[in-house]
Amino acid sequence: MSLPAYQNGPDPSVVCPPCGLCCNYVSVGIDPPSSVERVSTTLWLLYHPDVSVYQSHEDEWFLLVRSRCRNLAPTGLCGVYENRPFICRDYEVDGCEGTSDIPAEKVKFDDAKSFLTFVSKWKPRLYGRCLAAGIVPPAFMAAT
Image (cartoon, rainbow, N blue to C red; front, side):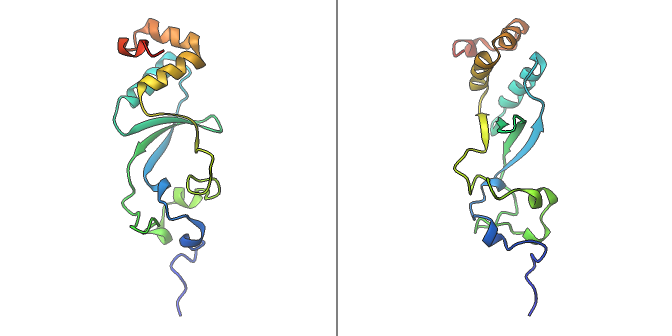
């Protein structure tokens, strides 16, 4: 009798809820929006469809691009589990979207307007500098 192919780790059907939530996006760290230039970059990111920006509970900022992994099986489990990339191996199942009631992010923005509203309340002086720099579209000013 042969050993399971995933002998280098636990059986995915035991440790991973077959929701596939973590396999439906790519998330990459970005600089926090702490300057006019960084706010401008965050706005540019949010002007694109299927892109979000969020702040983690550890106060780190991330770009999130919705994109389903090609290896996510119809069962909701990884189709290449035994050969998955290191980033997948390092992912903590405890506290993931599929096992926790706590949202994965502290704040999340799916559009520029909601992000600018946040900046206007979170850092009003920075928001004022963004207005002065001309990076806030007039249509978004009314919402802030």
